Image 1 (cartoon, one colour):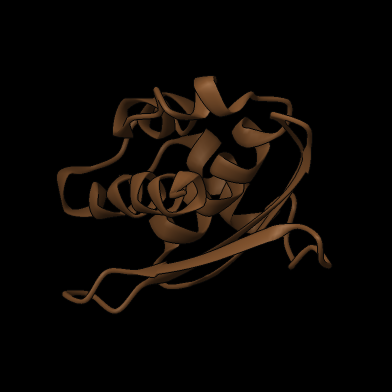
Image 2 (spheres, helix red, strand yellow; image 1 turned 120 degrees about the vertical axis):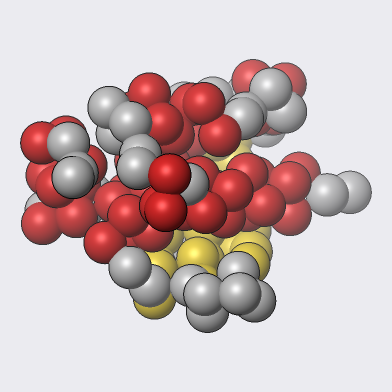
Length: 116
């Protein structure tokens, strides 16, 4: 059902936690399933210097949060603005249809992060 890569992110997630201020931290949730994703990003000018996440949710949402924090690190705001669900699906070697909400949660987090 889940790819080996997704299970690796779930079993040994990277970048777990919350970054201290002046990092920007956003929190988004899926009202249907109740999953919550908190993403923290420390900026160096226009570039995400570091990222961390915390997730309350299913296996796919936890894995997606880990993959998202890893992907965000080193990206510019312009690169983040091009983020889509396809990025997370690629990073996790796919998501089953019933788990695609995890990628949508990541898109919502990036949108909240980039909000002026």
